[in-house]
Amino acid sequence: MKKKGSPLIRFISGRMVTHLLLFLLVAIWTAPTLGLLVSSFRDKEQLIISGWWSAFRSSVQYKYGRMGGADDQIQENGKYVIAGSLLDENSLLKIRAFGDRVKTPDAYKAGDTISYKDGATFSLAADGSYRWESPVSYEKKRGKRIYYVVRVPPSFTMDNYREIMAQRGIGRSFINTLTVTVPATIIPIMIAAFAAYAFSWMKFPGRQVLFVVVVGLLVVPLQMSLIPVLRMYNSIGEFFNVSAKSYLGIWLAHTGFGLPLAIYLLRNYMSSLPRDIIESAKMAGASHFQIFTRIVVPLSVPALASFAIFQFLWVWNDLLVALVFLGKRDDQIVLTSKLRELLGSFGGNWEILTSSAFISIIVPLIVFFALQRYFVRGLIAGSVKE
Image (tube, rainbow, N blue to C red; front, side, top):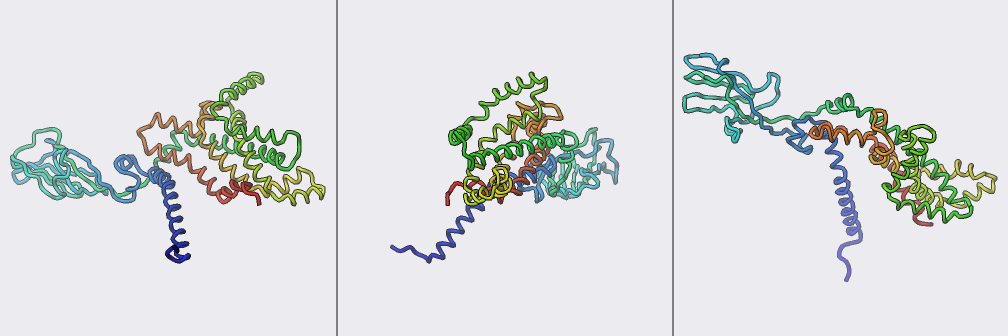
């Protein structure tokens, strides 16, 4: 049987389904980041009572206050009167409803009057002004508690970021993380690029066996090598009378852990480069170093950028290696470790945690979007031979 519909209709419908699925996938991955960004600019009260998706519209909040007591009452026309306001003078809030019981805070609309059995009345206006009248004197020192409902307009503030940067030491940890991440990304790229060129275009005994060993290191869990490597660093530190917990130690650690993947990716890419170009350069008298620096490296920018994204994101978000190879002094503690401390000390202050978390992801986002055009191209290069 023939399929119904023209090829054009089937093509358009197929593309629409594909685009819809991609849009949903992007929305699912973007929503948490967007929520974190919005929450980081909200104040604590709004963050507790409502989700980030309601940040751009007014929210309903339940509050309470007290009217004046016996010392605040005056006599007017033979009645005892207590008047005042439950809201601040410059408040922009508007009361929608009120009540005198905690179970029914919205029993009356703003402007209504509550009548009591002893003849007393109480009214509350939308601007917060209230008036209590009674034929008998109010005897209690503390005024009656009044519950009310207000609609709070959306508001955003930079106070969370100011507090984090000024008082919590996040700024220093941010600099420490950059100090760890940038060299720990550049060093393995440099070493892996030389090694990948050697595996691709240089002939030496045991080349294939050595490459298989390097690829085999990809399956070794990071946690298994932490303690042996740390012991080696401690032994070296004792021999040279220096501390093993230093920036140099963590740079070398991240370099060692990232080299297998870097060599594997770059070797696959470099081996897929046109052989005619390399052979022509050799016939022209170019050395391996000249071929590497003037031909291979410029052509391998997509692969280099692809691994740079992997390595940068891994080192920036690392906590385990930083805890093992760095101390907890202010000049060494990284951002992930600092956020862990904040989570323990300020677990209830969500406004601080959200702003701190967004500070920690802003740099990886910039790096990814700056290099993303090379990302897929560098990953799939060399997987298919032409």
